Amino acid sequence: MTGVAPSPIVIPEGVHGTAKIYGKSTPPPAATETMEETDSDLIAKTADGDARAFTILVKKYQQAVLSTAFRYLGDSAAAEDVGQEVFIKVWRHARGFKGRSAFSTWLYRIAVNECLNFRVRRNRKQTLPLSEATMADGPGVAEKYEQERKARIVRRAVGGLPDRQRMALILSRFEGYSYEEIAAIMQVSVPTVESLIFRAKTGLKDRLLKPKREGLL
Image (tube, rainbow, N blue to C red; front, side, top):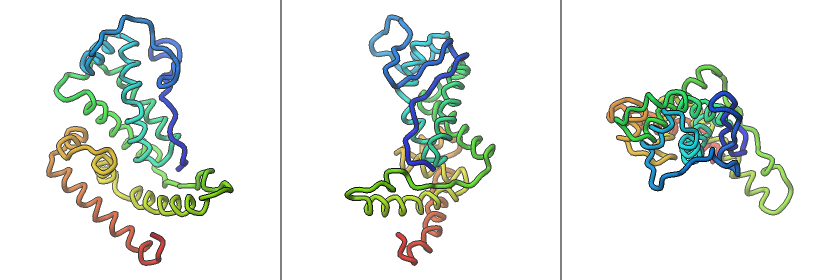
């Protein structure tokens, strides 16, 4: 896993014309913006081919999607690939949003599925190299190295959890979603979420016992 945060989403050519990098200084397509547009308004306009509305949604949610993918996959390049695919699917399948849940729930459901599918496709073990920052000389390097070393141990432990347990734990512990929201995102019952998170915490505790005994944490 690289220690570098994922870059802004790049919407490739073919989605709505030429490539755009949203989240930087690239201006959205020209249009008259209505104040107080809701997510429902924006996704409805996106479904009608409104690139400006789509740009707003990407800018609003790209960091959250990238953050979740990065935590789940442990690799910034992989997170960018997943984030790219998520928003391409939002553009292409905007008419699939029926308003039965919040747009953010629908979006996270796509993100969760893409993360799970990515791991199935890659089916490989995570590697977590030191970031360049921890290898540099200067004040605080030892402390940074120690923090990175401990973080790698925890990330390996989280990375070893079964997929659904891992995602439920990330959505709860790191993203701050309620069990009800996680149930909607993962399309399972609240008791299932409770079970997934309980088993994830138990599994994580077991995986960290040895490093703790050895004084590594």
